[in-house]
Image 1 (cartoon, helix red, strand yellow):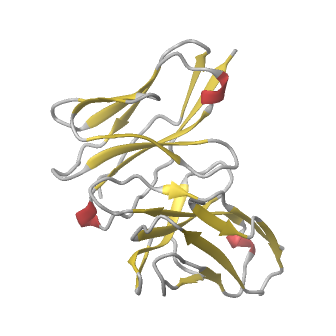
Image 2: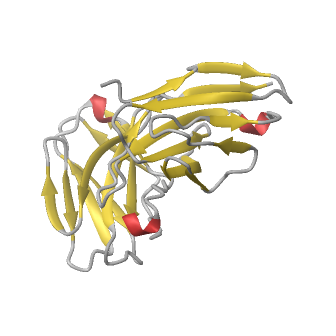
Image 3: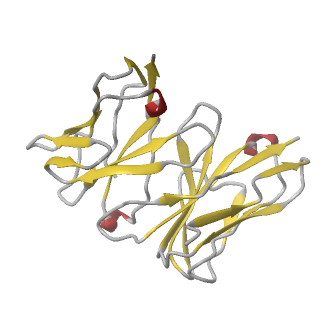
Length: 111
Length: 113
């Protein structure tokens, strides 16, 4: 399974865009990149998933460069309720879909 | 659909006691997972299952056992509870195809005293 590296924490202010970059230098050809969000005292929640280029949904955008060795989760115009831990996962069905989580990035949105 | 349901939500165990954490999903998912999360830390995979009758160890399986007799249920058994097992336990499930979207339960907060 590809190992991922994320910043431990980030601070932001309401209305700003937050970008969290995840490094996965040994990503395999069949691996997808998935991001989860976790609020205190809750289980993680799926945000977005991608394989290459750019993916956008109602919550976030995911940017993946051509070499796929990193990815960036972009949260537009954050609010206080976006304060959470964000996890980057890299995996593939062939690897047994173990869904291995790293330490995540703790994002604090300030007023 | 209820999604992933975990019971109980809270439990206090004495050292040496045993208990089973229940997890059920109604989405007909093949893959199910058990994680533990210590305060301020990420999730550690305990055990996972790719289908009924098939289970495998994750990163931290010692002190736990699982079974998967049906697609819906994936109970986690703690034998001889120890203070180091004080944690929040999350169960999750997914289809297990190329996408890795998993759905998580609300967690069981376990304290061993």
